[in-house]
Image 1 (cartoon, rainbow, N blue to C red):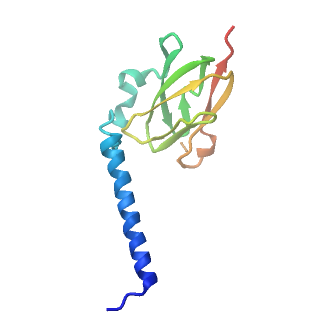
Image 2: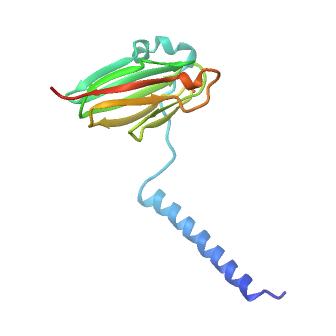
Length: 158
Ligand code: CUA
């Protein structure tokens, strides 16, 4: 069988690329310890209203400058939909859906979660600049999807 010289080059390049990708994956797994997300807390979406933290969703201060927000999403709103924190606050969000899949993206931060029924989405954002940070649902969830929004109000320190 005759192999064209160009074909040989492409075959060699493909092999090199495959080895490169395998190498990159191996380094990320064995050197940096990167893996798929493990078991996350699961909730039964039907009993969400009774779960301890989500029974009274809202903002909780855990330490000076540290907050936790328990957020419940549903067709077509977030509870709470207004979150007030002082500038410099580090806020960890725990968010769930009570019905269908929703999303949570907070403008001006890199917090972006998918809220899948039965899973708790978590992420942390730091709010250094005073102002209003809009958050929206970014997963199409039905007729009034586009109205599903809220805001984080970051107040200047007195
Ligand atoms: Cu909720 Cu779109």
